[in-house]
Structure formats: structure tokens, C-alpha cells
Length: 309
Image (cartoon, rainbow, N blue to C red; front, side, top):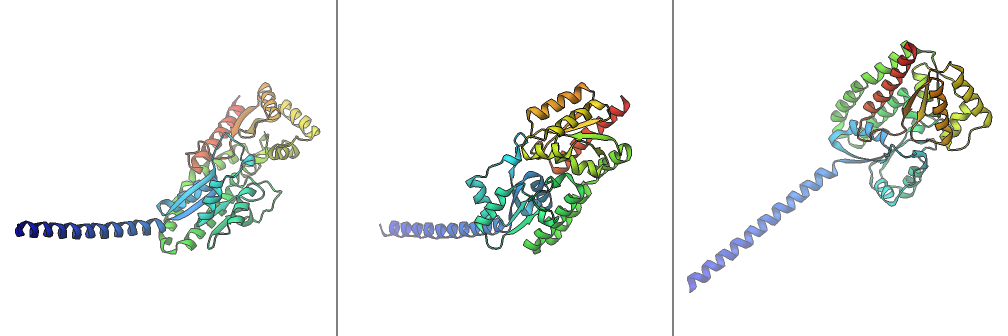
């Protein structure tokens, strides 16, 4: 009987020791996992064009949430949510476009006032103020400036990962080669060609490619702001599309109105090539470069088609 008691006691001791060992192991594992995730920077980008670029810079050392991602909705009309507020409050790094484009994000940043949080306002970086054309991501020089600042900010936030971010930055710059090549090809072959746009989103890219954007600025600005264009600008735009001088009409697929639809119809009736572009990355799973390359290819093909026709 005593033997059984000793055996049972030994078994109980062994179970207790094993349980203690397992508990200690699991505690260490949990601590290790917690430390590994805490080393990952949490980044929030108000829009996915900036989100795509910072994701490529940060790689496995950051987690990125892009808030405005729907290519079928107008980003100008976006309304923030409680989830957006929470994400921004918990982020180490927040990237906004600025220049009045995403005031909701700036309001959430101000409300959360998160200690130690770094914020990149692209408009401020570029020394641009509200009222200017806010579509900075269609200007390649602005893109390069924003990417450089993102790189510096990531290094500042995680200096131990500086060599990793430096390599990612080099890789990202190298990946812009096809994007730059398309811009240079359009500039070389079609500089001075008259084109039109239903909105100011295309102004920066038209300048980069040396295309002659002739559509009335008042019309483009009004559509961008979601208001009715001046009547005279509508008449002038219609006359331009009927003149035979305009080769391509570029329109924003995310701000379609009866008026812009009528302009597309008028363009096609007068054998003007029509090219659609989007305000956010489309598809939303694509990289910034793939998205831009696709749009530039469509523009180039339209110009080639018109010149050969």
C-alpha cells in the first residue's frame, strides 16, 4: 500500500514539474512573440498610393494599413470611421496627402495626439498649401520626394533596421525604371500633342510628358471639387473636342458625372481617343508602379493609335 502511495506521489510531483516547465516555456514563447511584433512598425496611409510605396520600403519590418482603397468610389467623398480613428491612434507612422485632400485624416491625427508618432504630410513636404492641385502622386518628381522622406522617416523610427531600409529604398528606385521609360517615350514621341482631361488629376502627368493639356482649367478644377463648371468653360471644352485638334481625352473613372459622361460621348463622336485613369491604385492589389505603368501604357497606345489613324 505504501509503495502505491510513493508511486502516486512521485507521479504527482512529475506532473507538477512538467506543468511548471511547460508554463515557463509558453511564457517565454509569448514574450518572444510579443517582442518580435513590437519591433514591427505600424504604419497607416490615408490613401493606398502612398501605402503601396511605404509598404515596398518597409517590407517585412512594417505593417501597413491603407484606408482609402476603393477604385470605384470618389476619394474626395470619403468619410472616416471609428476603426480609422483607432488605427491612426495606434500607428507609429501616418502618411497623409494633405492640401485639403484628406482633412478627415488630419483631424483624426490631431484628436489622437499619439506620443512619439511621426506624421508625413506630403503637401507640407512639397511646400504646397490647400487650394493647389492635390493629386501629387501623378507628378513623378513629387513621388520621388515623398519616397525619399518615407525612407528617412523609417530609418529615424527604427535605426537598427537602417541597412534593411536602405536596400529596400534602392530596390524601389530601381523598380521605377519602366515607369520613367514610359514617361520619356511619351515625351520624346508626342511632346506638344493636344490632349484634354475632364479633371485636374491629369495636369501633373501632362506636364511630365510635355503633352499640351488644353481643356479649360476652370472646368477641370470644378469637376475635381464636385461642383458645376462655369458655363463658358463647358462650351469651350465642347468646341475643343469638336475641333479635330485634341487627340486624347483623359477622364477620371472615380468622379463620373452626367457632364463628364457627355464629354466622353462627344469625344468619341469626334474620333478623339478616350483613356480612363483612377484616383486610387487599381486594382487595389497592384503596386503603385504597376498601376502607373498600366495607365501610361494606355495613354501611349491611344496617342500611337491617333497618330497612325
